[in-house]
Amino acid sequence: MMTGPLTDPLLRRLGPQFLDPINFDLLSGCAYDARVGKFLKSRNRQASWKFADKGEYVIESGESVTIETQEEFNFRDSIEIDGHKYYLFALVYNKHTILGKGLFHPTTAVDPGFKGPLALTFINLGNLPVPINAGDPIAKITFFPLYPHPTRIYGTSQRPTVREGSTDFALIMDAGSANDDDRRLAKMYGRPLARLYERFDELERSVELRRLQRAEIERTERRNIWYAAFIAIFSAIVGAVLGAVITVYLEHSDKNPGPDKGALSHVNGTSPKKPQVP
Image 1: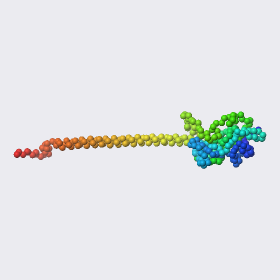
Image 2: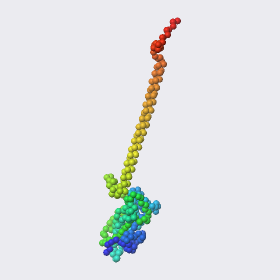
Image 3: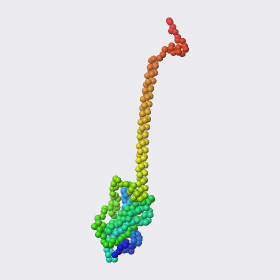
Image 4: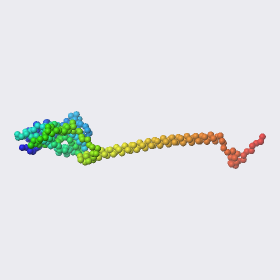
């Protein structure tokens, strides 16, 4: 009975039965390099990307994307090796060249009975953006024949979930509770994502500070307008009152000349003129 992973001679002979399309140049000693397919979905941007229409996609630092593979896998049918039938199981893990760029894919399993393209999720943990395009080798897959036969087969005795193997559902994310600690999640996904959270916090604080500063400036401007209007009105009232008082005073002075002119002359050192008797 076979117990180890399928090696390249068996993959060349049996691969077309469960892997389509297969490119033998992407084989290694006991693995196959899956390629980027037609679609990509970004969880951060909540958007999809079709390579045939838009070409190259750039995965930003801290961004999480789900990529559909070009290859379709058929683990629903068993394969025959040396007269024995086996169901297949596979492990999907990082290619060193992809991981070196900062793109990380957590090791995932493909259950016996699975059929269709894979939906693989990657996180850019590096500091630089990573461009990818359709046909690029993106992940390494190793295939294992299972013995004895499993009793739970994906898609038959084991019911699949809607997310598995489909980018149509890969963007669905569980709604977090109101008590989720964003910083705890950021630490869980590494320093680049934690730094992304920090930048968002800084931006939020900056926006809030600018909003408060703008509100204070607007309040100050409104106060200055009211003060200027009050001073103008007060000055106009005071000016009008003073003008009225002066006008009344002058009119009163014209009607009442004031003290006797003779007395004034005496005060000035001159003798008052005597009235002439006719």
